[in-house]
Length: 210
Length: 210
DNA sequence: TAGATTGTTAATCGATTAACAATC
DNA sequence: TAGATTGTTAATCGATTAACAATC
Figure 1 (cartoon, rainbow over the protein chains, first blue to last red):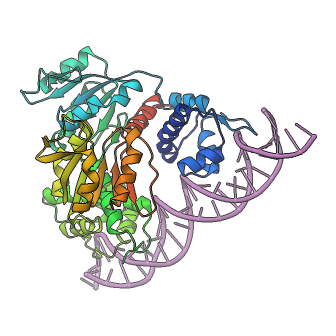
Figure 2 (figure 1 turned 180 degrees about the vertical axis):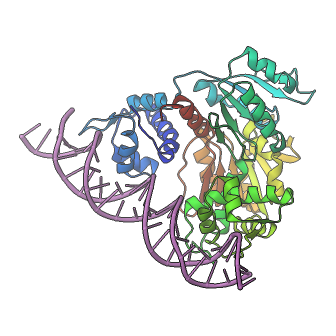
Figure 3 (figure 1 turned 60 degrees about the vertical axis):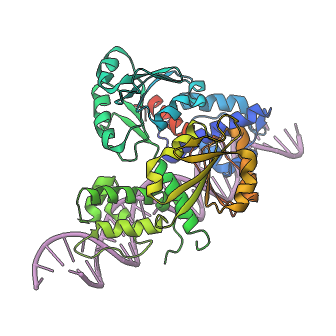
């Protein structure tokens, strides 16, 4: 159904999903591209173009059914599937990800964490066992993993990614503050926290003069 | 010096800074747009266009001095300034931000955290005191704050933002998974972790057929 | 039916890439 | 000087917006 979908559109999809969930929770059952656009600060035109990348979910003269459109976009995002997740690094970032309540709600199940620190190995974070980094290969042989979260220092991230690839993992959510080299058939999405904070800093520095 | 700079350019600046820092650490002193482009997966043309939004930092026939360009971009990003930061919410996300080592290196100093939970108030996270949420207004009267980090549940985020604005804070780094309404003279940069993970999920779901 | 709003094509706008003269 | 590479203008490409016929 969906032909080529540009990155610009893909990046907006989670926003649609989030707003539609909020609208649904608020008891709104129907919405036009006009109203949704006002809420999301997008033009009605853009919303209709975006949605129609995936099919005609609306009705002329009426708009969109909130829960129906939410459901559709959820499926497009793959949130109807279950994803098995492991987290590499049981520091504060790794632990925060392990504890993030939304993820399990959306079908992401963290089955293990890995760390090199002897005092962390053997403990649990949010009922998830922390295993020794050395056991990664064995774990990947025995368990299917859809997504690996990289939450370790930048210096170790590339090596960890290589080991994950060897072990068959093909999707990485990277929190390490560096850009990683990866094979074409591996998907890497970065969360560069520092980058985001620096963008805020830029906007503060150039507040008026732009 | 800098006229209008598009958001697309601004979003790439932290990446330049990061790569230049890595190059500097690796002992590279000079680089051409060609080489930097190969490293960052950008076209040389784009790199030269981006950099020339802020002035001619290169030399014909030679390229760019790594440390010089890094320094320039750091200044453009406002990393030569000191930013006083507070964190609202001392849960796992707030604590992870408080412990993130890079931030203090780049001039961001967290001076206080705030939480409603009685058992957290009075404790410290990475030597930063956790104060009661009720004391926010008083704190803002007594202390200048450049940036507030919102690391609390979505349901409380809008109210917190309003209180921050009242207290004179004009820049917010938002981790709450919701889009917030804010006055025009307030800068809000979002870190929507769920959105990022959903984009990864989308790419997994549409792996081949695109 | 009349009014509203979609789906979709066409027009515009902005960002990226190419090209090349300037110059180190 | 010759070679390399920038800074910058022009060309292209893609994304956003506008417009409108289709239709609920």
